[in-house]
Length: 191
Image 1 (cartoon, rainbow, N blue to C red):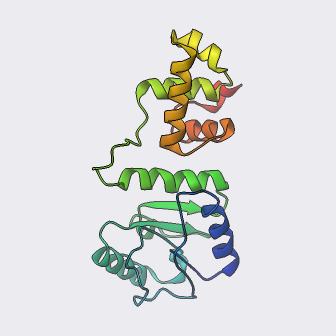
Image 2 (cartoon, rainbow, N blue to C red):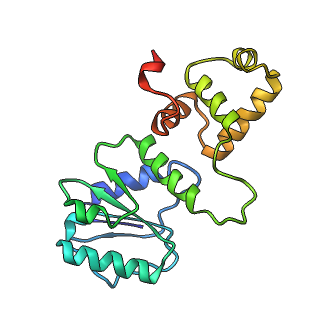
């Protein structure tokens, strides 16, 4: 769910978020103020702009959200300066200058952490998968990765399939951004 006063921001976020198969915007509210009568049942992730209310109203709204749905993840949409005490109430922040892939990555990371424990797939990359990911981000081919890690090419391909399944990122550029955002590689290593 998205709550923001700007239809442009709402529509832009909807387009970015729904570009991937794992997220769907079920509801949105264009409003100039946060109200506590918003229907939050069935919402997993809430994106809300804190500048729509005073700190006390925002604090109450977040408290009410967590009371109604304790498993809901709440992101602040930071379109301008927001006091730190308001930002400390939420699980994450999406900033106006975030690249679409960064927004998806932030949502993915949070949804991966909050998936129920009975799922058989673990969203966390293994240490070997992280090694393969770093080499992919550095532009190495499957054959080069296999030689560097003393693996068969088929094993490297299997690791890459697991990485894609766990991150839901298919492109090398997307995996590179993921590696950078998760501090698996630094920008200086990319040169």
